[in-house]
Length: 386
Image 1 (tube, one colour):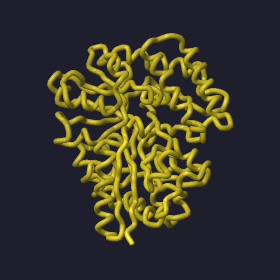
Image 2 (image 1 turned 180 degrees about the horizontal axis):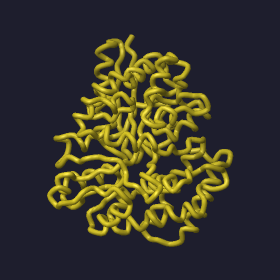
Image 3 (image 1 turned 90 degrees about the vertical axis):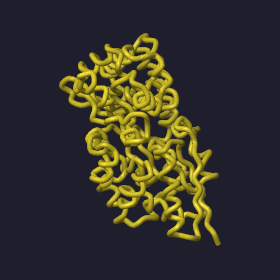
């Protein structure tokens, strides 16, 4: 009897091609299994509720803020009870930053990390050299380059919110440390004002751009030189992928606070608790997250791996212009978002609040008040009902 597994991932070379490649090879090794992958947009990946997918798909590539909902409602298989302890221990020991931990909630392993990411810096080294410039190392140097009109960054709501978290964490206060507020007034105001000072020096069209759009603009035109923070895509560091090769680096330093602490992203491979083919699905998930596959087939297919051995691999770095080596420190210190059941209600609405302030200005107190109200809503029983 043939086992047919269906998977859903996100629509980009980095999100789809390595899943198709690993599925093809797994099917060659397991002739009785057929795996098909479908795609959804990056926005749908961030927003669409997983409960609408778990009845249709065996395999789901997810974002870690879903871990709380999955653990609370039993939507995803607890992989801790289906994989050898030694395998999971290796995954934990070779995590990139908090990537592995981000999918573990209330003792349940809701996914295996297959992709690690956080906002990092990127630039056009060829244009920098041609114009006698160098990448900024400090916030003040970043502002100077932005005043010259050469800086671009993603400004859609989700990225605006993630970078607000980044500035708060860098200023010394991680958001959501308590249940009474998102962040203190002093820290929140400083973060908003710093952020608005920068984006006012960038073109208004960034507010419709996600990281992919930013990288396409950087690589495809000579208009911009530098992006200070956007979720990294190793694809754009690979020769032949886009118009020009991008160089990726760590983030700038903010005064005596040190380098920015960006907000952890990446993806995990999970299995629907409703899947009738759990054993085969677990075998495939373990195959994709296997360290050898991660640093060879997965990277070779355009993937951005989650296993640390791949980030430290000489061959993977050679293929990607040292993308992994140059940005690893930024991921290791990245802030991890909340994952409680209900958090996604906050995330779905708070980004618009921050984005609107960045674009239009106004009262920082009003912004923080609205964020606190959304936070309170998300903490209420049923607040996470999607």
